[in-house]
Image (cartoon, rainbow, N blue to C red):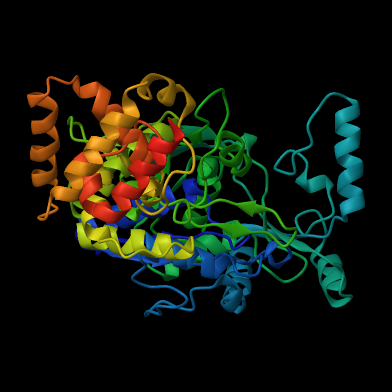
Length: 502
């Protein structure tokens, strides 16, 4: 690739960034970095009626959290700004006029009422109304009117839109990196509106003009834009510009059933579909991966495999490894089924790989937020619990007993563990614990196990009720590690409480 690769992620600030949009951003980022190119963020806010306060900041924060920030954008800046379409609106009229001058676009004065009447008439006869070559000369536009009539309407301030004049009777070849070669009969295309009566461009015109002016070389976007490909290619041709290469990514599908993954599916099925939590003005709350405890590495690794595969058995990829391995020709055409359990699998892996100092700090923060204060050494507790943990919150689920003594005992376990001889056996355990001066797990284990073995007592008769006394249920790491961490006084207090409850 002789020309420097430049890609763009161009979301609309109409709400939170869906995980499908994040996947599109990631694939753009990976492609840019793989080829030493630029990753541009452009905010497509031409439709001000759908603008949502806070959405742009959300998009930027999400990309930053995932460690895939834009090289250029509305906050970062760059040599091709402004990066918000609403700040570029004066540009678009000039280009719409150029298309009219070249005969590739025209003024359309049809009122919405007139167009509705045409649609209803077509529906009544079982047809679909399409504004294009077959009827445009019969409608209220500058192709059908005389030059004098058009000038009079413009001078009178009549409302109009500018439509693209789609070529007639042409087989248009299309090329897509993911889908290969395609073609379309231009007769089935409608004359899309490029410039609206409110003085703002539609997505189609603004998108093409911005991609050209920002020197975008590759447009990597979702499959939902595939129907627009023909129009966009025709627009590039009409302007006399070289079109970028296109790649349309497969849809993200629901984990179960049919259809694409929607923003409501996640909370219905118990997993996030947004990178960060989002609070709507109506009071709805949509959960986010960050707030649900996921690590950005896990989310990125999961997203990379939605519609792409490296062609190897490798599943765990760092961001740098993804950049190195990524290839658009290995992106699938068919929809990618979302798998929440696989996401948890990635999350579990990355939690195990975390620096224990960082993990300990996060768990301490979690304890603080729960209002739990402790004098115990949390840095010793975390390594004992983390193997079974997928999220930081799981460390609490696995080890809350370190910080809160049990107030009751699991009924099923107690029935099995607490027998007639249990109080006497636990009383002897207390006596042995009192005798130990160097209160390490190894010393405690040697003393208690030695007593059990030398007296030919069944291990289960002591160890089961001992664990239940300390934890309240049959879970947790090695019993002697627990005793050592709790300390002599606390351990004995808990055992005595169990003796009283037997």
